[in-house]
Length: 248
Image 1 (cartoon, rainbow, N blue to C red):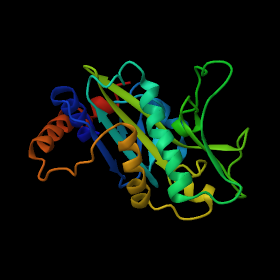
Image 2 (tube, rainbow, N blue to C red; image 1 turned 45 degrees about the horizontal axis):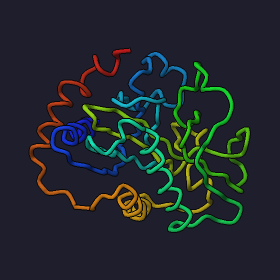
Image 3 (tube, rainbow, N blue to C red; image 1 turned 45 degrees about the vertical axis):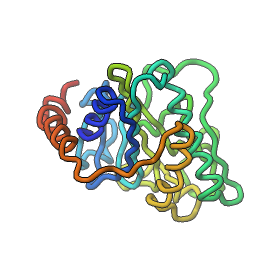
Image 4 (cartoon, rainbow, N blue to C red; image 1 turned 180 degrees about the vertical axis):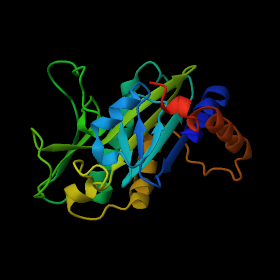
């Protein structure tokens, strides 16, 4: 979380865009920025996992058998004025990656969520992946033994954002497999009935997303001493402090 905030600062201060893929160890529950800490008790399966509070909004996410991405874009791109443009850029390119690069077995499909009817209720579920918002990525599976949903579609990717001086940081998570800490949430491996490797998925998704955003892919320069120092300072002042995690 501290590295992602440092990348948001870099986007705001220097105009750099950065796309980062990573995974978590150990399994960690991240609270959305506005979620009360006490609501953690609403999900007993994850009570034993590590805990962090994101600086982006949305519902809680159990980071375990999934792929996380962060995308920091600078001011001037217009994404601060239309947040859904960045959601759709990420999720439409992920949809195309699954269809064209990973491949969907017979009976499966993937689509973006376009909810109809009333706005989201005030008493939304605690977990992000039990909620649905415009632009979320959904998979319909022909596999048996999966948790039931009203319409047969399962959310496998969602995103949330944080803005700073016109720059935008978008966090997103792609479920790869149901976690013992959140068994009610199937991932791609459960829904497609075959292995989906995190590295292969990221490698196939990266050029599609970069092309959609008109970005040139440049490998990170190493060592990133200044970035590491800023991230460490942010961690010490914020994400490493109980006052931040328990603030609500």
